[in-house]
Length: 207
Image 1 (cartoon, helix red, strand yellow):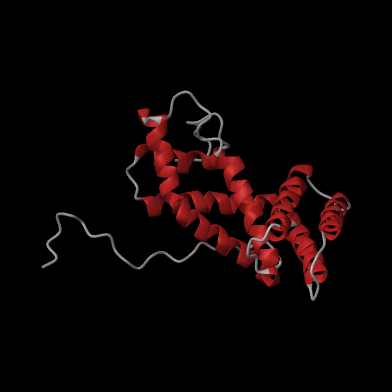
Image 2: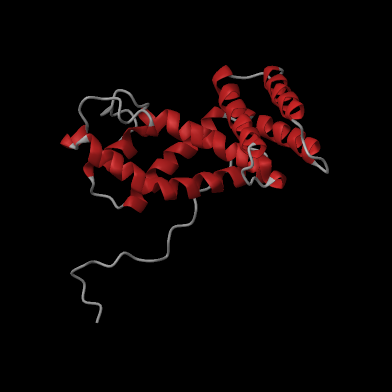
């Protein structure tokens, strides 16, 4: 269906097709995840490279601060303020700056409170979290915001289908983040390779 066909008024045109597929239930979970990731990729590319630059700057500062020393409470507060300053001094869309800052601060929070974070790959982890914020704010959190869903599907079934594609979405976002950091840009993101396993038709004679 063309992106202009609106079947859910709370979603941008970009996300109408994956929403429709999830409602109809004709495509497999893998196929639905793939069409969501394709649209998410377009969305991330459209939002541009600012979040890549910001997450890299925050990650560099984090690496410098954590190399060879144990951080005290005041150090964490200083780092948090440095993140604020880095983002404030950059030019670009305020909403993207906010999403990138939130991603950076979540990594900072997790590190401070004992969660295992690979600091050497902090830029990838921060960017992954930014991309996940985009997915949730642009698609996942908006899907329930309508009283009636396409094709008469009930909310519980639709939300269950969205949860079923979550592992594939996470794999895709992880791949996008690595691509973006490796290439210093979101312009050349690629989807994960398709699974080589073929779905067996239940009526198929495989003897």
